[in-house]
Image 1: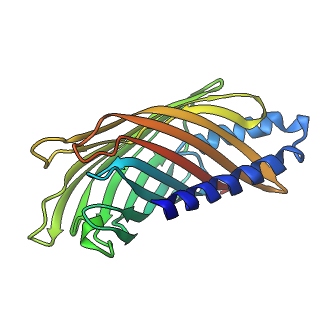
Image 2: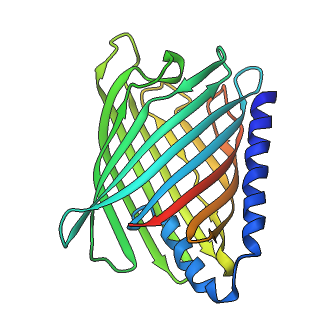
Amino acid sequence: MGKLAIRLTTLSLACWLVLNSAFAAEGTGEQDTRTEVAKQEQNPLARLIRVQFEDNAQFGFGPDNGVLNFLRIQPVIPFDLSEDWSLITRPVIPIVHQPWPESVDGLGDIGLQLLLSPEKSGKFIWGVGPAFLFPTATDKIIGTGKWSAGPAVVGAYTSGPWVVGAIVNQLWSFAGDDSRQAVNAMTLRPFINYNLPHGWSLGSAPSIAANWAADNNRWLVPLGGGVGKVFAIGSKWMSISLEAYYHVVSPEVGPDWQLRLQVTFLSPK
């Protein structure tokens, strides 16, 4: 837990030092541009290439109240299929530290969403397609041991300073280790963002999870939010956000609450 806390503190400090150094380079004439970039970054279907590093430190896990940590590397790359349609690819590569029932560090199961989305849209944009989970975990404790697939649906609405929507994903296992429990799981991430001047924003994007295969303790329901900032360093755009969530519903082994730090690198398609 000590090493993890040091890593999180160092990463947070480095991010905020970069953020503070960026303030001096911001001109007052760039406010509108920063706001528009922030809205695109908050929209999971925006035609924007991004690489996001999302670190989730989940506290109060297991009988010793340890820290369960997920570092998710999430590139998002859109492809033009025609004048009318785009394909949004959303892989998720998790690096996991799990302290219980034994301490394990390694690669988790890699996920992938392939979302078909119309090019022509107004304030509301949607995407739908298949989702996959691959048994890539380097240790059985941090993986399912199953090949899984199912539908994914994303919707986002932008109006004035608001960007709201949701990402929902349902997976069922269809192959893999017969000795492992079947996968029947849903993840839902609603998001709501209010954009302020100078690239600042307030937002909430809790990752709600349901394990339908469990006899009880099926749900993990966080409640909370945080603050974010979009800024430019030279010609390159970045965003940083820091959020905290209390788990109003959680399995018996926890976790009780989480701290999420996101650093995203942005580039026009």
